[in-house]
Amino acid sequence: MLKNDDMTHIDHANKQFRELVDNFMVTCGVTFKDVELEYNPKDSCYYLASQQRKNDWHEYHKKHACLVPIDKTWNLKNNQKALASMS
Image: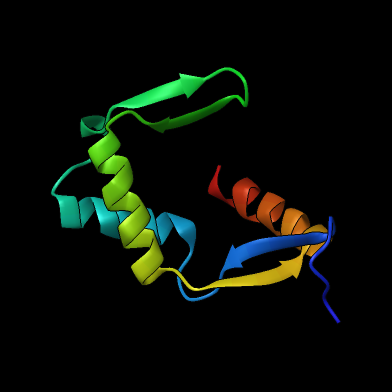
């Protein structure tokens, strides 16, 4: 049984995150080079710079993503394999 604890991750069940992003960008009529990002050094991540684009993304993700709990160890191991196969 999977518990909601520090060994649990939340993952996309119906579509991979990248597929959701690609579909969202098609819906918006933009490409990656058209989207302005801002870097946050506190967490070493990039975020959408436009508040409107953030709002649009949140609504799109809420409507199209199906999230499920999965085991953290399995998720990290399989994501590393997927990243390695992309390079």
